[in-house]
Length: 325
Picture: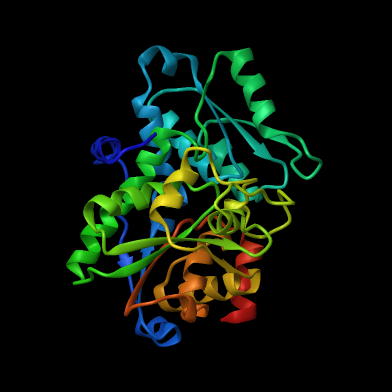
């Protein structure tokens, strides 16, 4: 499992390669939320999401013999692009398994980064894990999982190190940190980093309605699964269940999970564009949506929301702006 020491080591390897993304604010958002709102803009990270960090951390940690054989990843798009970009920079071949209904922008970008894209039909029940394992064995590839992978979690934890430093600069020692959550890689990595560097900042996972497996798992104390694996505009954070590695960390360090609607995610996208001048995808906007539209679920004078990704198709972004701007 990942540790704070692994997060520190991953952050060292990321220096000069990952962007230190800004923490943004707007008095207009503060007024809506009824408290101070700070937005960690990981949508401005390389490849448009925090997933670049985990991809780089995992690829850079591989032994040379494994790099020579190539890597495999499965993802709806953000982890795909993160691994593809990291692999290209390291001269490593990458095969990426993606759902056929993933946003076309994410599929196109992954191919443009030099990866071989293999599509599967998740709506029909095809098992990406089984397909991925077969591809890895057939070609001798090293599988880099999207969240249940120690080095990936460590790389994502570098976001937490930056939040701790930036919050300190803002004079914030007590706050709730809202994280858009799928399998829990970013959420657990940030929670581990903050436990060591800013214990007054407590993490809460945020998910879309109908895909709230993490919130239900935390409430019940046992891993719960989603009934569906597709069917939400928040494609970036649709996972079957919390990870076996991530869930114990979430249980130990996180507060209750929050759940938002697709409409709230779209409204948050529009407000992020209008007030912060950033483009955020639906799955990357749910944390901001919770901060803005669920104030009674939060405590304290400040909340930090991570805008995890900005890889959204133009038509969906236009829908958010035209409906809520």
